[in-house]
Length: 236
Image (cartoon, rainbow, N blue to C red; front, side, top):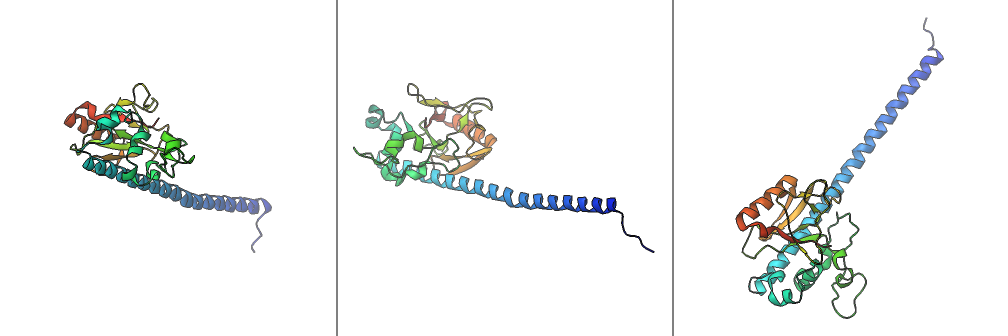
């Protein structure tokens, strides 16, 4: 003759069931949340790569119309100090860029936001590049690049740092052009794309590179064209 389970046994069985339910719920949440985060990060990086590709094309189009010179090589612009700030160089490229929105990376955590117009005239909206200036720009400019140096870095995510414990590179008014070390890394303090970043080369290609690939690209460019090729202007 079978006997019914005692009360303590019944309570123990219920507790195990509850634990199983909780574990199932946590597993479901993990499966739903983690891929969503990964998908969002991948989408941001793809949009950033597209932005940089359009930016590189704008530089190349400008050079084709100005004796194979980029804005930072044109004497009239240099003499007016328009080469010393990132936003003024991009303002010069307004016709080639089409929209200032592509100068902002959707993965940029620094508080920057995209400008909606260039508006370089006497009146401009608060959301114009002329008003927001470097606050609307997420990319550095490779001012050491030349139009016939295909593997030179022309632009990229601006969150570069000399080493893991250092602050990101900064372009100061008195010395805006920074020669970047070949051991530089993607900063984890202000990561645009986790442990990686995007670079646009002079030939118009865009590379999605890890820390080691970044260092390889910097090293190869320096060995081919000299250390001055890795002279960058950051949007600060």
